[in-house]
Image 1: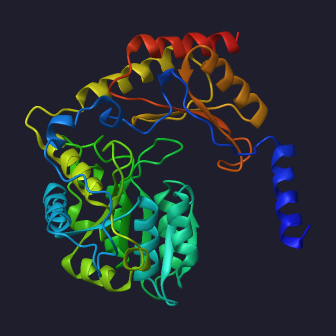
Image 2: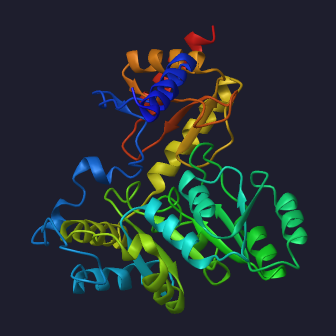
Length: 374
């Protein structure tokens, strides 16, 4: 065995011994409370009529800067920019690519990147791979953010990084207060709207739009693999930022562009949200029902969330896996989130609500959980 093979074997053995070895599993035929398909677009055929006659080509043939650009891609960027009230939009192949490309491109060795401690791995990795210096602040704590900004006020360009809806706790960032701090300290604010897209705002425009903060945010990232039911992502910002990313974002420059069928799917998703009869009201009514059940249950460990993401912290990999197994045996597809994805002691059940879930299914969750806590 070579040294690298020995290293790999030891790391895997350590994970298995700790009870947190990750494995690929196929979804079971059960009530979906684990996917990010919040509006049901990916699983219900809601886009079928909108996709009739659309381009279903399988390959873009190259990067956008070589052979992979198209009129359809440019038109889609215009549609997205208009929908979210931004000057310009630039498509990326995924949210991970968008965050990595954005953060590594705009920062240099003089930059100070101040980020929420619960930011997604793609944001954290983008900061790590940038040439700037990263500092994290306590989750959603604007006083802690202000202290970091104060310490960095005489240093280089400052960038504040956050999510609008956090993927593990489901809570919402204090965007208005953060925008005020960004203005006060002449910092650029970047907001990842991955879990807000399609969910918040009358048409699913996201939280930045619904709060009227478009002009206060330097860049926004919207991803399409969640409520939009397809794949890819977009960075929204100024025309100048778009031109800059086309020239300096390595994850945009050096990759094959999204294929025609992806462009068609994303376009159809935005057409769906733009329809006069579109509404995400039913999803929010289901969230309100779930929160009332949380209150009525008096069960400890629930995170405070008004988003589709609901989390019950149980603590301990074995305990949370046992709870997830009981729910899955009851026909409820709910997964355990283990350490190291979350800190030790914060292991939890992550429950995702969707427009297609029912109150009866939610009742079943609480009935099953109550038996575990009896």
